[in-house]
Image (cartoon, rainbow, N blue to C red):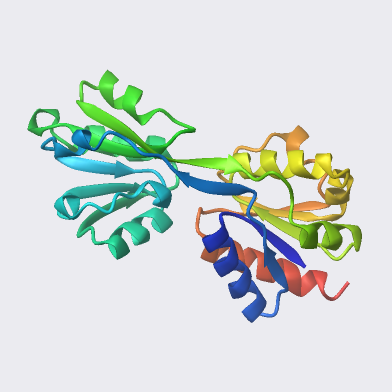
Length: 239
């Protein structure tokens, strides 16, 4: 059994995808989405482009749909397109690479930029672009809060030794999972699991060395990670 630690929607989709391929998987969200109200007057400025670093921050504003929407990651880009944005530009899952491209390609004299983000950020896009002499407004449109406790079904799976691996694609998810498992006195069980992640996630040796093994995808694409998991599973299931 593989546990997919992502937000509810994506974790459920990924787990179903793995299960359909013959690899038992279950979703486990450890962060919950909470929208945050902000001053709507900030949306009335004549922006030249909008920046989304997460699908949760995408604004459903029809007046923005024709603006260039710069997105971090393919998931954010696909969600923006589904909402209605017609000019979507995506980069890797690194905000820094996105803003470097923005600062090189956009004309800072053609108007301000709008960045819709969560309360907690890993990289300060606003500070970076202001340092490059861009005008930029940041609206905080949501917050991802750690859940209060782990699902009882997951705790039972851990204690029954049915889990063989866990997919973790962000350090925040890792920290939340570890803290919640420590509270339940079950963190030691992870030593029997394989960790599946992206090579680009900057885990330290101390954070992940106690897993039974680590399987990394060289790209930040779940499709590539799935191939790595499938190759691992074909060998693991024969043991």
